[in-house]
Length: 422
Image (cartoon, rainbow, N blue to C red; front, side, top):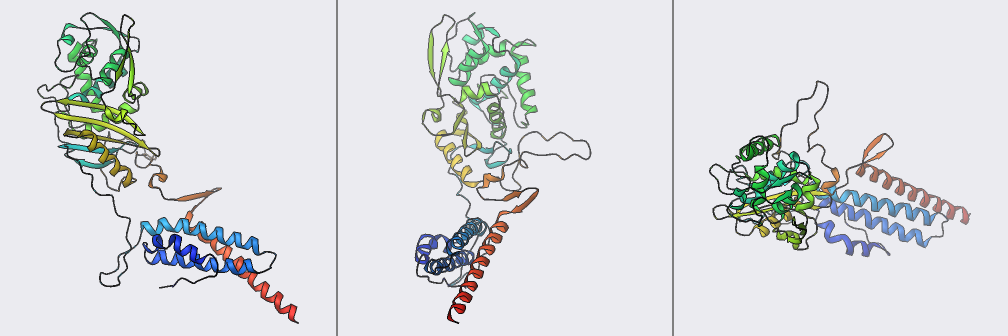
């Protein structure tokens, strides 16, 4: 194995600053350190010389080395092999995957929103009681079918509904958006019943049929919808996988995404009085950056449920926990795990409807194929005009060019000294 070469200036600094990291990469890291130390030694000798090109060559050589090391580090960290065990054995392997999240929920799932890939799942396709996370689908149907200014009269059934009510009175007239704000912010069951009763093709029953149709269109495969508010109606069930798809669909509706992403909302009563509503989702009031919502839920039988979303560095994840004693701790653990894991692994389950059949000769681009290469955090390729070249190859070429210039300069300097002695 190559040994680092000591140099009078720069080499100790290089060894001290990066040696622990490079040694952790095994033989590849030690080779990188060896190159850096050798270049530092050349740097010192050139600075001590009076050659007119010394300064330029120093700059070229050191910049080349920095580029080469920057590109080599991810490659060395991401690949490698393990030496046989035993004394003195050197191990290099892929960076360890993040530890599995500590989640106490009975069922749950973590979804990469861009690709639809499942990053973590526990009974993800098991239909269970979803409680008020049902209102995600209720809002999707209402927002797509009703106009913003459409007005609804509160029915008597909405006033008598079980669970959380906002306090609407029978016969009170409200707009679609007023009802959506109370539905998603404070989980108003009377808002859900009012929206469902306003369905023109069959009233509440027709609205439930439309909920099922829309869920099927979005790729849900495990759920049956029997109550617009999410109460424990017979046959009313949803899986974590289906709720993740519904959460992702809601984030794509700007009106709904704005409501669920607001920690506080203003509600104007028909008489003009303004009331400030605090969102039931405590993640929004925690001050954590990147939180996007989405919806909490609770019934005695379902326990606490939550569909949450968070965005970091341009990447969005949707987490679902059902039957949890600590919904916020569970989703935080899932987000920590998912963002640390990086890009979805190959072979991961992908949720959502199958892409439509394309005419022959056309390719189908899935969400996974559109994944931003930068999401992995590693440099991939660079484009020079029409040519696409791997970055490590570019770095190696620049480094070799710099070393060649240094060698030519040294040869000319020796020749110059030899001529001076003649």
